[in-house]
Image (cartoon, rainbow, N blue to C red; front, side):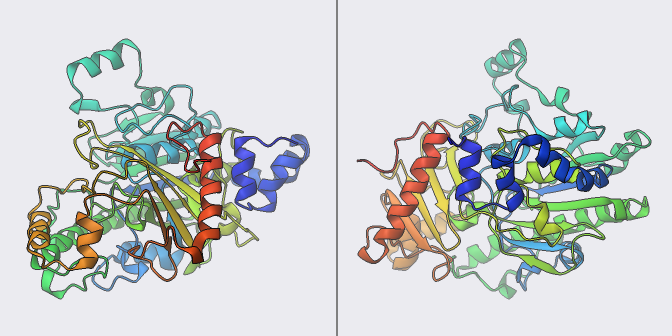
Length: 481
């Protein structure tokens, strides 16, 4: 029996019994077995809250003592905290494309940052809409209709002539100017459930939440960062953005409660990709891919529960669809984790994959604007494949910030220290990096090429190679012969 690409993902991930059954059981039998449970969930409202550039552990409930995030912490106390959620890319556009489609950004041709989601790629709100949901996207741009107002005239002309902007046809309501939940709710037809994605700009740079910033001198600096006065100042700015975000989310949750919608609304909070901090956004390190995910579902999710199974950004779409009683399309490679929410057996994934492509619309003058890399993450290890290994690391969104220039000066003077000099300012990167995430969560000790991890390296390269082939990846494959 030949397996499709979707079947490969599910088989290599050791998905739940339900996911495996979708491969081997007749569709009619599987549908009948699920029909009763799915029917009960048809009128559940779904509220999807996305922060912008937000890594774990930058929420109080993830163990960060310097962050005051009472509203997000309350979500964790009332629901479930996911500790190993990875986006499919360390940048907004490809990551959000996967969230919407339930598929790899490579598979759906979305690794070019300024690309619009192709019209033939189904976004899950379209299926919710067909099933009777009133659907909307509000707040921070959803990033999937191209460059928008920042596009040059020739790009705008091409988009208009070829009708490339598709989301006004995919959902009922869009407002990229403001995150006005009350205005959206007023438009929901009586008797219809809703799906709404609220995008917040925080904690995206620039950091301007001055009234929310903690004292830089009071912070505990992560071991992944050098402790300098300007790094402290920058991190305080990031924390201020997160604390302002938490305030905004608190107002959103209060409105849901005041409207009497709390008991029939599942609220999902997630970061769209990693933070614009050192070795984070734009990289395939943990800071670039590992994001907070909190889910509150009254009467279903046990309060204060914690989940450590591997979750991919691809898994959000099929989970939302199953919550609404809709079977995910065959082309979706994501795996619904609704069993986790309901406290049922769920083996989950053995591996997740991610890709780095171009960033923004800049010319390829450095690895902030253009980088090509892939990675595979297991329950313990990560393999990073740097196709442009000859080029040094350039940070995304803060190359001109004073703290980064100060670190460059310290490196040139020899006062930064070998650990950070090697990680931040090496002339080139290794083609392959392997990290033991249990022993080395900050990813400074590269195990690639070592005899003691040769078998692990071989296995991870084989998995990445197979994934790249099945996704028709355009990069050279990681196993040469």
